[in-house]
Length: 460
Image (tube, rainbow, N blue to C red; front, side, top):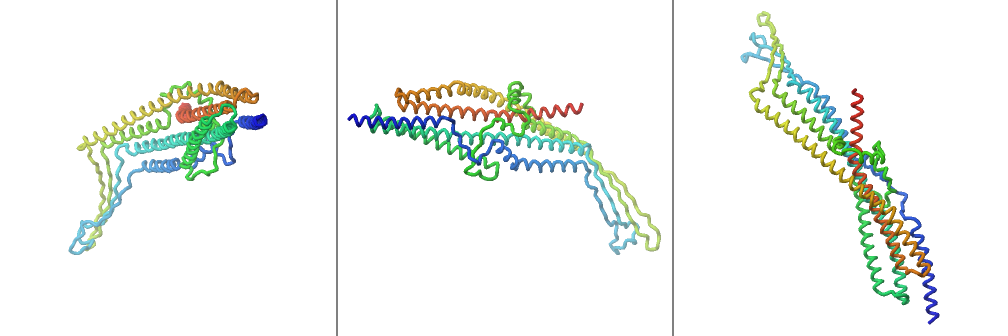
């Protein structure tokens, strides 16, 4: 009997030495396997921008508007007419009757009021509107790609943590089964069932994380026109990459978010600015509608050639000059209705602009609150919980080597350490997502505001 107990004790000691070595190696550093084929956040944004069909389409739309603007400055095409008039039907001879003539005429229609100049100005505003649409698309593209990349990054990092947890549960299962089979301590079959339940729960978590990783990687393919390689992984997270393409850095962003009044600054956001330019273009349409109440003039001139008479008598040629004008005064109610409709559209767009600014400002306020809360939680984890659970795990591991603690307590402490790391990872990713959303709101608005201020200084 003594021999059996000694054998069990020897096995337990050997097993304890192996477990201590494994646990120590597991937590020397947080594992984050990065394959050679790694896609950084900055690369993801850069590729999406270079391959975006919408931005390319806006380039063609802008070219079309510039061509239309150039064409709008010209008058309507002159009209050339030719005819043979008063040709006698009894002989069809050009010199038989004195009124027979070969007539050539030209007619030019003049623009109605200042319609051409107003159309030119309207198309200039519409060209700027396409610029603003491109800026809005660019900002939205950066935000969307960043959020998807962060989902991909979180799922990939979480899979690494879940693998660590799986290793610990396997070790706990081996020890529990060994102690139960050998009758050591107070191990019961319910302990094995609890570990098995934890493994099944972990398997479900792993399946969900793996699904999230695959979905995020597939979602990125929308912006590249082809699926990402199956061995592609997200690179390490660098918060500065969220500001790719902007001139400000993170410290500038925090300062602007803290100090600026969003309802004023976000009026320069491309989404709001686009509605404002659309309103400006519609205001030009109001002026064009008012020009329709003015008469439109046309001038024409013609030359009539006559052959000499059959007896040799000379016949004079004819020159005709004429002026035509339409009279919109009789349809004045129609013109007034068109002007009223155009004015109503301008007012509606102004309302849409104010509504959009309110929505953007409300989002900014909400994101500021979220960022502050995440900062508090991150500080709690980094300055408190992480150190506490790490200290507890090390203490229990030391106690286990001194036979004053059981292995299940050690594993549970290390599992808790992984769970804290998982929670801290989620906070880091959520903070990055919040920053991406704040950058979408503030960065383009701030750059547009600075650009407008520079232009104003140049004017003076």
